View 1 (cartoon, rainbow, N blue to C red):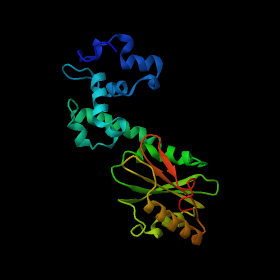
View 2: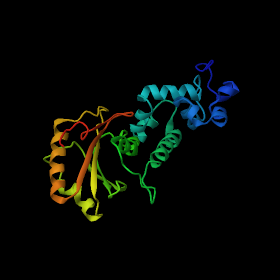
View 3: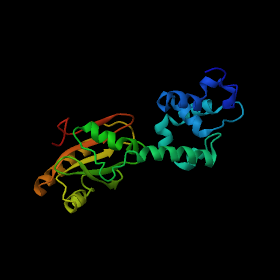
Length: 233
């Protein structure tokens, strides 16, 4: 893209390279991440147009996931951003997240660990702490509800197993799937993850509620199924 560093107005970019025009002619999927950010930023700063600014923000925050993870105040402090632009970008990210929310009759059917990851990964990979969620499923493996149970470092001695099954009993769920994130981005299960899984599986047998899997979410498209790895099952 010609002369991006020297210009700071979108109008200084040739018409066929302007993000909005590209989106209109070729669709949003054809735009690079910095171009999508440029549409939300609308303007750049002196010596840096919106596309170059979007590229810098991606580099500074470690990609779109880094922007997702950054607090509102942290993002506001980035050069050229401020509250208005930060709000626009954070709002766009939240709209994307809400596309993943289970609503009404649009209950997804879980048939693989990938289905679980696809459902929760967008939101979970942006969390700065470990969170433990439980998917409640009916007899057709459709998601009844997603319960956000626990926040903090997971430990089988401190996580109350009864709390994990409380909603499943109330909603008459046939099965559950545990899912938690690793803020480091590495989805490799820890020894504590395996111990917790083993304890939950045993409790599920006593309650006649099957524990189908425990998924650990990392960055990008990375995740690990403890069931597939035969860890705790």
